[in-house]
Length: 142
Image (cartoon, rainbow, N blue to C red; front, side, top):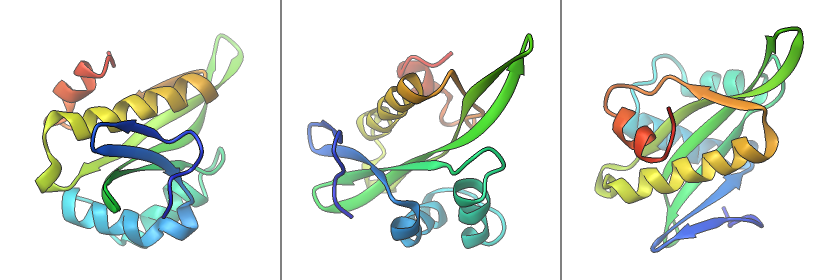
């Protein structure tokens, strides 16, 4: 995996949007090691990122040097508010390897997600688990 144009870098970490097909094994490894995903990981990848009902999702990968150490995802959804169709980003799958679980790596990922949402969507929403709420708030999510 190589950094794509527009990759963001904070100190020793960089974040890049990744090609889902090419990075499927990396994403599944990060999920298996860091998230409590139930069911088959390949099916989760297909359902959320490839075959979403409102378009394909996106994944960002966090790198420390040349290693993938975290990820975060965006599912595409359509919401309707007062008759207007809105393109919404469903935030999901924030995962950071245990050795990199200080505030900076997750914050770097979340700020990159904010940039994606602000640039390409009308709104973003998510349901962080209890352990992630503080870092989402620190990144500016409400």
